[in-house]
Image 1 (cartoon, helix red, strand yellow):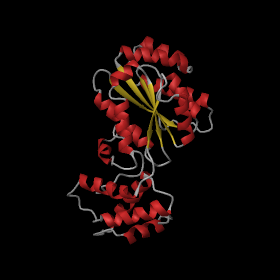
Image 2 (tube, rainbow, N blue to C red):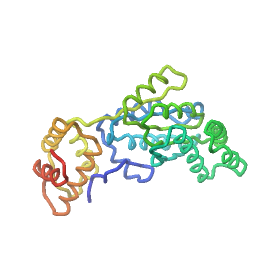
Image 3 (cartoon, rainbow, N blue to C red):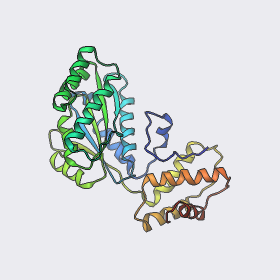
Length: 294
């Protein structure tokens, strides 16, 4: 059995096993703690909507962080208010302008909530009539969610434009939390200038980034310690340090996605052969065969 998850964002709502795969790497733990301090429970969201923006390069774990934060919030508030997660991360509409993208997301949110069985026929009809106008739909949705003592955490697709994130900040109402993500620092900077900590409706920012040399062993140790009796190839801290030093210093850095892909792949090969121990040359060979350089 491979102790490392397959490549892709972690989503504990869909797989409870994923919760154990969050390791203390790439500043993600600091970002998660920052979220818990900014949004300690669902009661605050019932009083004021908000936007949380995950910032970091491609493959740095933004989507996994959003899933973790939303799941934690749902677990913290199982009753009053109840938290529902609407995962719209796959609803990206490349090529569409901001207005089209925002309208699409709000219409999709309406569709998702219809399936939750929260509202009666009259409420559903009112939401359907307004589904194409976010500025009409969100106030009505906020009211209906409040009546049902429900908060919805909406996970948005990646954004390339600050204007789009700021638009969701305008739309956020009581009982609605938008999670946004961007790989661009200029988006985060513009959002901070427009809606920083001192503004009436600030956008909370959570930052993740590239791994450092120590993160490789932290990641390996975390996953192996979860299943200490699992029969897997041995690997030393020195080996992982050498691998990370090569990648971090010689290849422009390493993301958690790359580390996840690397360890899942090399351990799967080692389990299939099988191999008793993994050394640096095994990683170097794997990178060459995978059309990468170490």
